[in-house]
Amino acid sequence: MKNHPTNRALQKWLAMGGPARVDRHVEGCAQCQEYLDGVSSLDPATRTGLVAVTAPPTDLQERVSDGVDIRLRDEAAAGAFADLFAIGWDFLKCVIDPDPNNAPPHTVADSADESDGGPK
Image (cartoon, rainbow, N blue to C red; front, side, top):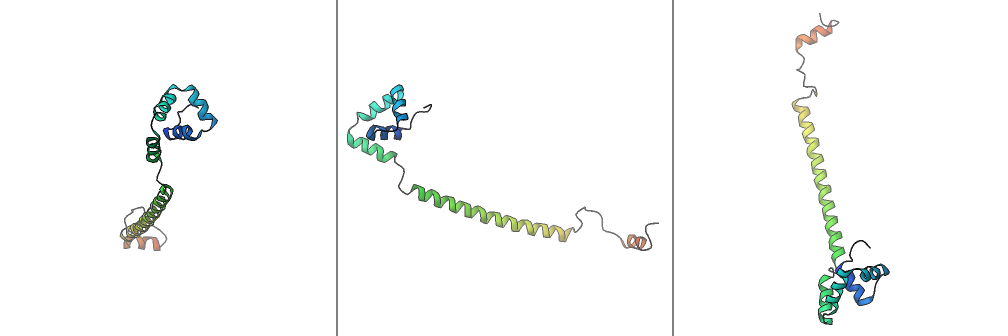
């Protein structure tokens, strides 16, 4: 194991035993052994408090899931608004300048030249 187990994993290992990989790591890691010595010298009430403080809230998954749903819904609404704004902007550009190449409009004289077979 290249990384140290989390303090919570070490506490769980200390209380109930644990995976063999944590056993092997603790046997060879002075830092984790020192942490476990410090934690195990605490009275049971303090250890229980430590576990309670480091435990995630029971509704964490629900809150995260709800937050993700809200964010996705908000992003979809913002995307739809942006799409509608873009359509309106494109329509306005077409009304203001119908020629996408920005060429000057044809004059009446140009139309007359083209009607008799082309420019002279």
